[in-house]
Length: 298
Length: 143
Image 1: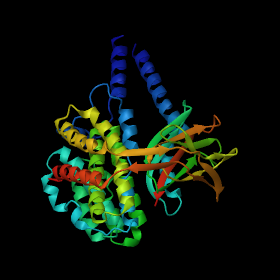
Image 2 (image 1 turned 120 degrees about the horizontal axis):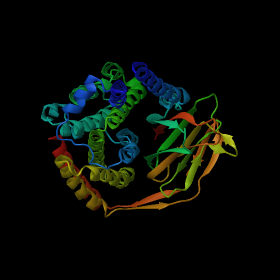
Image 3 (image 1 turned 90 degrees about the horizontal axis):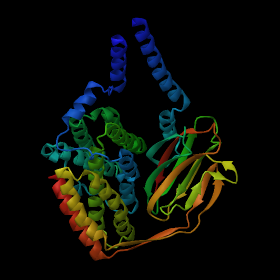
Image 4 (image 1 turned 180 degrees about the horizontal axis):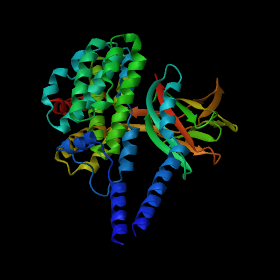
C-alpha cells in the first residue's frame, strides 16, 4: 500500500511540475521590481486587452503616407541603452526602441535601424527573451531597403512571440510595459510630427483617436497597482487621460454592405467616427506625452 | 503490491499521454495560424495571427482596435482544403455585425475591411458544421 501511495505521489509531482527549461527558470528568477498581477486577476482578461492594442507600425505607416519627413532627432537615442538598469526600464524601452526600429524601417533609414536592432537585442537578452529575436536575419534584411516587407514581417512576428511567451509565463506585466513603451514612443513621434505639420488633419485625428488606446492601457494598469513603478506610470498616464477627457469621439453606425471580389469578401463600411479636438487639446497632449516619455527614456 | 503500483502508474501515464496526443492531432491551430501569415494578400502588412480551436466551444473571439482610413485583411486557413464550415465575422463595439466571410450561403476565406470608424472591433470565429472547428487566421493592414 505504501508503494502505491509513493507511486501516486511521484506521478502527481511529475504531472504538476512546470516542465520549465533552465533558461525559463532563470528568466522568472531574474525579474526584479516588476510584479505580476495580484491574486484573483484573470490573466485571460489581461491578455485579451493586450491583444487588441494596435501595432505602432500602423502609426509609422500613417506618418509616411501623410507625407511627413523622417526625423531622427525625435527618436530615443540608442546611446541611452546603458541607463536602463531595472527590468521595468528595460521592458519599457524595449517597446520604445521597437517603435523606433519600425519608424526607421518604414522610412527606409536602414543604417539608423541597425543601431536600434543592436539595442533591442541587448535589452531582450537582459530580460532573457533574446532568443525570440532572429538578429542575423533582421540584420541581413535591414541592409537592403527592398526587403521592407520581410523586415516588417519578421520584427512583428518576433514581438508577437515575445508577448505570447511572456503571457504564457504569467509575466504579462512585462508585456504591458513593452506595449506601453511602444505606444508612448509612437505618440511622441506623432505629436512631434504634428507640431511640424499643424494643418495635417489626419495627424490631428490620429492623436485624438488614441483616446481609445489610452483607455485600454489604463485599464491594464489597474491590475498592477501593487507595483510601485507601474503605479507611478499609471499616475502619469492619468494626467494624460484628463487631457483626453476633453476630446469626444462620436460614432455613427450604419449597416455595411459586402460583395465578393476575386474570392475575397470586400466590405463597404458605412459607419463613421468624427472627433471633436482643438489645437489647444493637441498642445496639451503633446506636452504631457513629452513629460512622460522623458521620464521613461531617462 | 508492487505490480498493482506499477499497473496504476502505467494506466495513469498512458491516459495522460493519450489525452495530449488526441488534442494535438485534433486541432493544431498554432501551426495553422503560422501557416496563414504568408497567405495574406500582397501589399498587406502582417499584424496578428489567431489560433481558432473550437473544440467544445461554439465560438472563438479576439478583439483589435481598427483605425479609420486603414484597410484590414483577415484570412482564414482551416484544417482542410476549403473554408467551408468556419465563418469569421467582425462586430463593432456595439456588437453590430459589420462583416462576415459567409455571404449568401457561400464560405469565403478572406475579408477585406476598409475601416471608416476607429474603435474596438471583435473578430469572431463560428462553426457551421461540427466537423469544421479548427483553423488558423491572420490579420494584416495597409494604408
